[in-house]
Image (tube, rainbow, N blue to C red):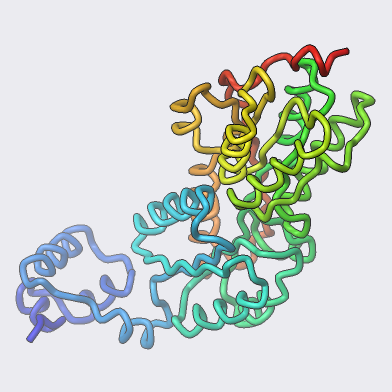
Length: 342
């Protein structure tokens, strides 16, 4: 039979109330904390988390809802979230909606049944109607990487300035002489994709370059979709002289398609990708990429949620944190080939 709280009391000489207070996250004297922790280690005491959550109404767990688990950005965000939350004693339950809005309600209902203390949410679509039930139960929620307009005045958000990242990337290509620039843009109903497309179009417009609809391709954020759409860009005529791929999976798809087409990077086609700085530097040629502050985004979202889960923080106005990406230069962008400059 496992050790009990009474065993810890006998070992430390402290009262049950003091030990219970510590186990439930309360503040105790430093010397008492040290004695309790030493007894817990020696006795191999295991806290009954379920029983504690029923008593305190706190499970010390946080739910994280993401659209897609097999995605580098998502897994990187989860890593930074988990590290920050674990340091404060919270466990993390991660749920994947497979990019289906219809699954969001199912996933959120599951997390409510698990009595999560808070929620970090990456919406699949633009409305996130399924969040209403969570908010009605006063569960704190922080949105990350997805802006949902109707929650702008009520929820904390941590966002990337996707518009500026795409604008800067497109201008980077334009300043090197490119006029026929393709974009692999994810899915139009997703906030990040629409903002990146908006930045791309704004840069072309500012420079007086016509927008070529056939060079705007929606890929579903996947390597397979990007591969298919990149091939299609070149199925009629010469195709673009440069491609802007707006996530890492799409960057890989574009590279594979260009290889199969026999187009060299950057001699035939220049390429700007997204994320995974380490792998981008290891490629030949090293990729020019847009690098998101992924770790900082996760840490900031976790910090906002930890703050919001404190009873004293309920009246704080919602905060929107906007972060900037940066372009990391590699060797995948050059002047366009002569045939495009005639």
